[in-house]
Structures are given as C-alpha cells and as structure tokens.
Image (cartoon, rainbow, N blue to C red; front, side):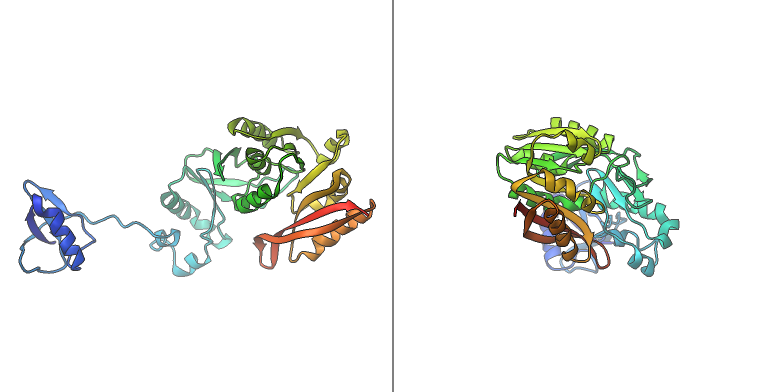
Length: 334
C-alpha cells in the first residue's frame, strides 16, 4: 500500500490536509511506528515521501440490515426479506418469510451483529389463545427472553415468550396518556404488562383498574408498578374482565379496550361500566372506521345511551388493506 511517511508530530495535520484534498485512501488504517506515521494514499503525492507499507483495512460498518446480508442472500431474497423487526428492550423479534426460513440462522446472526442487542428471536406463529402469546424460536445471542423495555420514560419488564407486547403502539399510548386528566377513574380491560396504565400513572394522578386474563402479564405488571415512580394508583386483577367486573360497584371515566381482535365482544360490559360523559378508547382490526363506530353506537343504544365519536385514527398496518384502528367515543345518556 502506498503511504505518505511523516514524523509523528506532523501526522494529524498531514492527515487532515490529505483528506481535504481527496488524496487519502479511506479504506485502510493509518499506522504509527517508531517516530513516523504512515498515511494510506490513492496515488503518488507530490511533496511527500512515499513508501510502501502493509496496512490493515478499515472495518466496514454496514449502513443497513440488508447491506449486512448482501454476501449471503441474493438480491431477490433481500428484497423479499422484511427488514423491519420489533425491538423490545435488548431483544429483537424477526418476521422471516416462509421462503427464507432455511436461511434463518444467517439472518439471525446478521440481526445480532447489526442491532447489537442481547438476543434474536423469530416469530413462529401469529398471536393466539386467550392469553395472547405467540411461539418464538431463538436464533442468536443469549437465549434469555426476559427484558426491560423503556418507553417515554417508563420501564416495562416482560418475558417475550409469556406475554404479548407491541413497541409499535408507543405513540398511541402517549397520545392516550396526554388526553387523560388528573382525577380520572380508568379501567384497562386487557392491560397486559401494563404499558397504558404505567405510562398514564407516571404522569397523571389517576386511579386505574387493570385487568388481564394472563397470569404472567399481571405478574409483570405488578413488578412494573414497583419499577416506576407513579403519581397515580394502579389496582390489578387477573381474570376474564367480564367476570372480574361483576364485583365492581363503581363506574369509570375512561375505559381502554386494546384487544383489537375481540374487543367488540366486550362492548356490552364497557358501556355498562362507563360513567356518564365518560370516554371509551376502543380498538379493532378493520379496513375502515365504519364498522367500529357502528358497533359502539349499537352497544350504547341497547342500554339507552348514545356515543359521540371524538377521534378516529389508524394506529398501525396489520396486513394489506387492514389496520389496527382506534376509535374514541364519549358516552352519555339519551
């Protein structure tokens, strides 16, 4: 490798000058030896002593997950690979297309190298069952599925094998938190590890009742209550909210229904538990808002109430043409 040889005291100034003039070879490392420094250059440079030296190449830092895989997968395979993945604390969960599953280890190793996280897992199934978990396969790193995820200042401990959690709802959770007023009585009907309750109670002086049928989720929610400094109060219940709510002798100013696949089957419970002029934050999977609005209106009408839709929004895409939608409704007596 051709190098400019200069005394060590001149090394930095010479390096800067050669870089500014576009003469330095940026693919190799500068070498310092004895009293001299050796700067790689692309060609002979007038005014300097030129020598040949063996220099170490610079490590190339990949600019994307795809770039890391260029030597391992074909261009078509990279195009088909969904390079977006969920990062939960120091764990990465990949979704690998069926036609690339035979190269899952290569992809997992690349994800570990690129993200520098503790562990890489691959989705093996869709969300399933009443406790809303999915099968995961460990690919790379350390097979430890417990992590602490940080979101808007909150710390959320969970085991990705035992509970469901989506980091992609962070903006939605913050939006709901900002709409809450101090003094509200809130029911989270399907709370999981408590991202809505924890985020809200950190910032607002509220009284939250949090229910989930998954014992592991409630276990981690109780830990998360201790992990975070809260202004509000959170009371947890493990069980089916339809059964648990039978013991409630009070109503709520706000009810959060983030179980998009099945929340509509609990609307009758929600409209009976909501205080007059209370807010229901309702979620479902749909290609539009009309279905959810009709469901809210119908549930209210059956108990002599009405709903004013105050906001509708698409939270995230779930599949082509289908969205995780949010509908906010203010419920009052007819």
